[in-house]
Image (cartoon, rainbow, N blue to C red; front, top):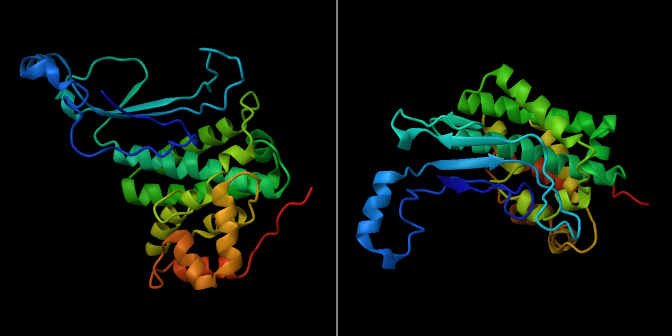
Length: 279
């Protein structure tokens, strides 16, 4: 099966199904056509995605890896032609795209939102931040907005999304996985880009005339996220301090001035809603 790895905010957390087929791509050429044909008769290649939070591991942990209990393993059923194997843990789906986007716009969006609001309110970890009623309210509102998009766009039911949101919020509250807000919130320029976890869903919601105020609040929180040692944080602050609002909006988000979300984002950049947290 073709695996779309998801290390959840560890540099490769955005899962995307690659185009085409995985067949034969990892078989060395020197094995020849016969081996390729033999493999084709014995194996199926299906796009698949795994969602599981793997926090930074303790030094000296060796081969032991600490992960959360929750996991989701979605696999496209198409290549199996109705004869899907009975593998524990697999969720068989007709198309992987909606499930990848559900994960991106819920887990990744919610994780970043928790980190940015958590940092501005003085919290050190995700679990600590989500226990703060102010932060929790912002994250819950964000996930309600993205859920409305996923229901409208992909046909997930309201009940499905309510259950999924509840599980995700429970994952964030897991104090046994101490995940620093500085780690989860890092690389804000990438995370605020046009197709990513904040501007991506906010833009689609604006296009549909649906609410997106909490996503704009997440953007505002990201703009005052200023931990040391993050090149993207430094670059973001440079853009904000040296560019006019239109130039900054374009560079940070990639939105066109004609887009229905543009004016609201420009206003958030021109007139900050939040101030930086001070020790």
